[in-house]
Amino acid sequence: MVLKDHLRDHPMLRAVFHVQVKMFPVTALLGTLSYSQQLGIYEILRRRAISSNDGKPPSLLQEAGCGLIATAATEYFSYPLFIAWHNKRVKSMGPTADCWRIRDKWSDVLLGPSMRSRIGLGMGMLASYNPSLHYFMESKRFSEGDAKLGAGAISALSAVTCASLASSFDFVSEAVKSKRQLHPTGFFFHLCRGAPMIMVFWAVFEQLQKYSAVVVWK
Image 1 (spheres, rainbow, N blue to C red):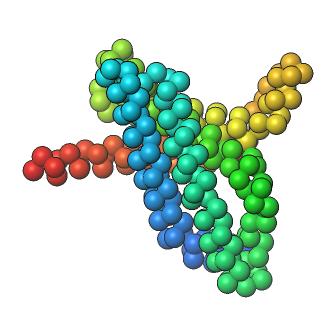
Image 2 (cartoon, rainbow, N blue to C red):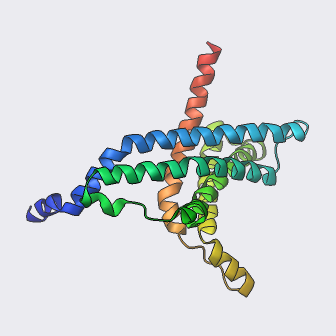
Image 3 (cartoon, helix red, strand yellow):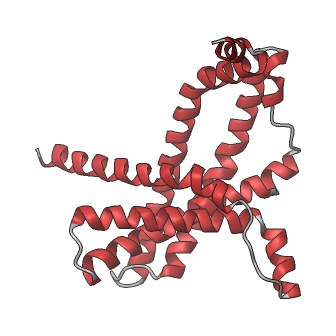
């Protein structure tokens, strides 16, 4: 009981709780808008790829290119805005929340490991979902629900791998040049943080698509 009271009254833990509660609504809204923008750009590029292929599905390289362009365009627009809002919000909360302020230089924000990780995560997520869904449904004859679940899992693993490799770009370059064994850094961090979020995202996205189709049909 004493430990519980101590943790509850700890200034750092109270600051963490205060920051998270205050920021969650806007963070969720910004995340939703970011995903919407990312998917919109991706779908436009993917349709153009299908058109250039005379109606055939895009190749894996085209899927990756569409995902890369869509994610980079989204992140370079939304991430700096998020950081500016985040730091302004943290500053307004007083000195106890100052440790949550993002202090990276803008050059590091735009070209650093964090940005590369976000772009890699989005590219891997988008590039692998549709090919995996098509493979499970057409080649393996999975049911629609099982195919979407499997595609979501493949998308999550692909995103995690791309994010960990992208955030470790300097290390990867050095390892390739020196022919050392490659161990992507941050893999388990991205696996625990990103994979569940991506699987939930695709499940919600498919449900929304199904609901919108019913509404349009009516």
